[in-house]
Image (tube, rainbow, N blue to C red; front, side, top):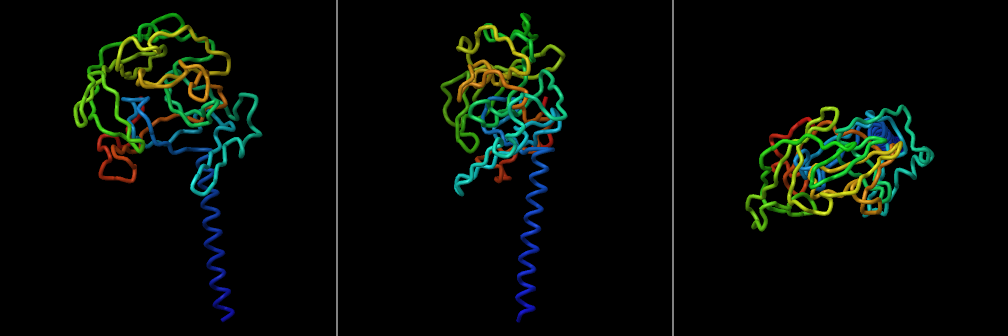
Length: 280
């Protein structure tokens, strides 16, 4: 009987050790290499759609306190922030093995105030000036090159776990109808080409003041220009403002798969044309 108990306890101990090391390995993988990210909103359409699942390359820009994962499990009362784990790296706006991002990168970063993870396109580098004039992006006083990209169409229906309806340039559109937006192809200084969407002309963020990007900071804008809270909005718990170098988490390079349903587990709603799709 004693041998049986020892064998049972030994099996439990081996299971505990296996789970422990699995968690350690997963934590190291997520901290140093890649972080999973599921697109929750429409601010980066049509480059990224609601329900796209990707891995963020954390090796691209080196490591800072923001590289550590935040663990939030409200149902268990767990709320461990990245600063709680790696706060000793915070404060000097620097990175370990740091590498500067490039204009046009699609970047996941930590919001300076709310500490939520955001994903946007890097538009302004340190020292740049950035301004929107009549919906056209100007960098260092020069308008970027744009060309007609046709029309982006999608179904007017609830999207993602939040069940939000897309905004349409041809509203009012009934549920199940075709929701349209103007698509433009934008070429940034340096040659990065990507699509942007326009829903409506004359909105507040279509015309902005001249922003000057300070040293050690970056300016981000969403590709879905009329449906993005980004660096055009002053830094608050809502607005993004200028993002410090240390708040960058990593670069989004490739979509692994994409779900058009309310959950990424609903495999029957996966989009067949987005498996392993490169992010431009």
